[in-house]
Image: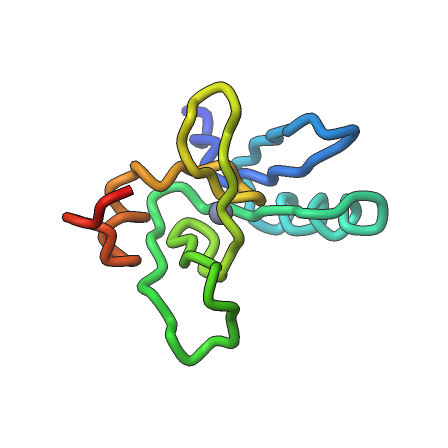
Length: 110
Ligand SMILES: [Zn+2]
């Protein structure tokens, strides 16, 4: 039997290190996420291949960007190594096509 692709990602930050766990089963991934939430902050759940369109109705702050991989408004902060703005939860950068597209960042000066 072919192995299922690991398309669900649970990303969490522990001791300021970013950890990614991959799952092929959604239920399993969500259970793990719930478990991690008891101990850690800033947990992201990403389903590979799914892009959430921007939701302006959802409450958010002015300085937050829409993270299309999580379907949430997130604060983006500068990654000291890559010198780009990254989602403080899942780590996607603002140079990503869908992040730019959903937040209408094309043509905007940095
Ligand atoms: Zn994110």
